[in-house]
Length: 446
Ligand SMILES: NC(=O)C1=CN([C@@H]2O[C@H](COP(=O)(O)OP(=O)(O)OC[C@H]3O[C@@H](n4cnc5c(N)ncnc54)[C@H](O)[C@@H]3O)[C@@H](O)[C@H]2O)C=CC1
Ligand SMILES: O=C(O)[C@H]1O[C@H](OP(=O)(O)OP(=O)(O)OC[C@H]2O[C@@H](n3ccc(=O)[nH]c3=O)[C@H](O)[C@@H]2O)[C@H](O)[C@@H](O)[C@@H]1O
Image (tube, helix red, strand yellow):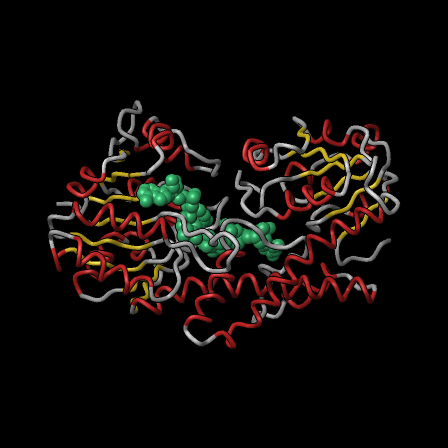
């Protein structure tokens, strides 16, 4: 009989994983602690904006006309325990309030809720990003609580998807990494991922700590690459160089590569910032803190980008924000997502607001989430409306819509033709030709 899969926690990762598992042909049951999320998903509605996800849900959610009916959602642990052969844990692992360390309470809570319902053989597979050592601790907890005893086993299978490409990355990943302690666990995971592996996706089998570390190492490397190019942007600004050209030129070397060398206001989101901090905290606990002191620098270069953007904007409007109208284009931490967690764009908007600027924000998909986090900022329904009467325009998230803006049309709406490109994706020549003062991070001023 085909494997039956459950997915615990149906947020950015879990909702996509559940839909993708149904797409691979499995019967899937998703569970979340938030009933509204479960209700929306059960109607085939994605709880967040993620390209292609809603189409996939509608193709599989039971009850949606024409669907395969392979995908259902529930809030019942009992149902999940009775249904699944393989249970994927996809709950959140945020940064602890006021600390660098990871808050494991959601993962611990999920395992504690699930385990008592595991009366028959089952594989619990952690996908959340966790501090190294968590899988070993959770395996012991599972053995203690599951009625099935040793027949309820744990494995670790970190996830590498990017928001905005989540569906594609889940169905066609670069690699699959599994931390296992038995042949049975490996066999079950090979069965789950048989299709992508048959298409050539590398399948890396390892132990628990290595599987956990692969994930935090990968995110640390990506964060380091971004902070490296942003450090080069700082030097370019001081020396009159052009970081965009520099990135292109060093990227032609295959050993360096062109990806993840976009200088700008830096990285944000629900993962890279909190993951490098949790990694440092965990290394400290293990007595290996010296190994990761460079990540402190990666973090501080990154945070400096945001204040640098605020400083440039203040300088551009004459030295003080009081009485100045600032239009902010972009609220999400990256384009093609509605995610505003630790968003550099919103952070910059918030800092300027606190310094007395009249900030108006527009984002194609992130308005609802942004309003929830920063209710005191003003919001506009379009880019054109946001820039009306502005003394300076800040381009902070590189949505395609912003790249296609017409500098002439916007020029008619603003009070002053001044724009700062925080993402280095606008064409300076185009804006300058239309009479704008144009400045980009790490690029020559004219
Ligand atoms: N968002 C992303 O692109 C990626 C996230 N990750 C990792 O995946 C994990 C989840 O991240 P997101 O999906 O972004 O978080 P999220 O906050 O969007 O989703 C987590 C979901 O888990 C639910 N939940 C929390 N505790 C629960 C419990 N005890 N029982 C049932 N449901 C519970 C929440 O209600 C929420 O819907 C994190 O560890 C993250 O670092 C890994 C790769 C990519
Ligand atoms: O662990 C996670 O959750 C995920 O974190 C990142 O994915 P994501 O946060 O969706 O977004 P990225 O595309 O990595 O971008 C992160 C941030 O870096 C910024 N960035 C990215 C690339 C770049 O060259 N420059 C740059 O400033 C983006 O604007 C964004 O704010 C990783 O890329 C995924 O592999 C990983 O699974």
